[in-house]
Image (tube, rainbow, N blue to C red; front, side, top):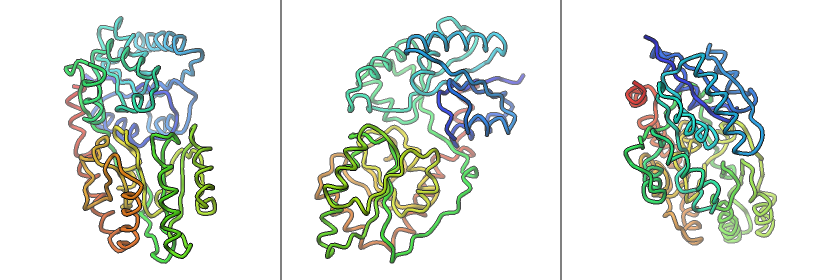
Length: 364
């Protein structure tokens, strides 16, 4: 008998991860459907092209009203379709499913947590409270890195028997860009892709690049591209001006699919001290790009090494960051090899063709 699975998410942006899961489950004789708690968008259109049914219900009101409305929508869909599995992602869908599983006895309902200690580091008290409500109610919790599991057990005091680690998996054939190669006589393009918040530590780059520029006869060997939006954007603009780098810094804003910009850049830089399983780093790996990141953050230690990336300590100093970029300037010839090795590591750990059995086991 064909099993039925419903994914619940509240964003419409394109996602290779969700497309990969949906197509893989379909290929394994599951009936796959999606409930979007938002307006239709790129992802729902892409899924529907493949014959996957998508429901879109944009919820309004505060978090309590949205949760109540979501429970009613989910109850109606479950009555009609009788799903065997319901799998939610991110806070609002997880909150809805956590309450819904109190009244639904037939389907296996799982909530997926996508962050580790971000709320603690940013002191987002409401986020911490909602996480604890979800974790107290939910019977089955999926995490996308062991770091998330560690935080939930140690800081949230969550029952470890509820938690299952399932890595983010991708069908890398769905990425249709050919990796570009950077010319050595052009400025090295550093690209940052993230929410613009203090925790991401993008601000640490400006005094470092200014210092390198002054030591290089006022010639800057780097171009800085910042992709994303958030409350720290104005601070970053002021920092670029303060350190005389406004002409070498470009703020791209939020971009639904940053792959082309990553492809046209030389190095992806992610200095964040809090991640769970960062998708952008994996996408840079697919494009055989050089990556700068911190050790002991998220799942980086699973697939990033000194051979395939440039790694910093989690609490790096300005001097350590500067020395790293001076080293990068002297090692342009190794970028191609680091990128090749990173792609191999990403493919080994996150290919859906090789690792999907973990999902099939969980949803069996």
